[in-house]
Length: 139
Image (tube, rainbow, N blue to C red; front, top):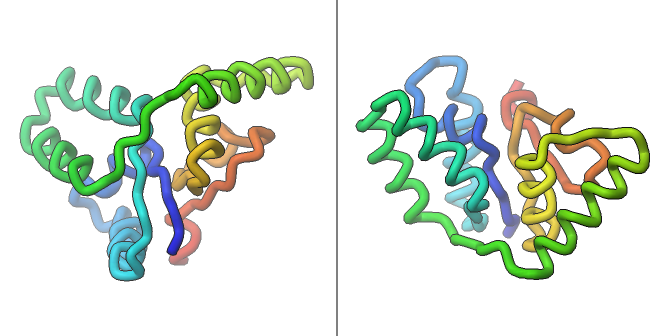
């Protein structure tokens, strides 16, 4: 059984009915059948919910909330914050400047042993987090 943390772009693909999103939807369904665990990172929750509220996307908001109910909510505890600040500092010392949200998502995934599912692989480069692109995996 694997543990996955879905990035904002991946959740968006699960919620939008578009033929190009089908590989992500199919892989998600396979992982559910395999009893994989899905955790929701509070940063991703915030990014998704704020965007859906801003767009007035009520149907997608309801679908998003239903999806989140099926996932394990994992909080940011002191160890996650410590890991995130250390990770940000190490990346900065190497000359990399990552978006704070991506550093927080990476630290959260590392702490909870989750693989980040995203098409934005570069956002997590150098963080040490395991990442998968389900768009590519199915092609």
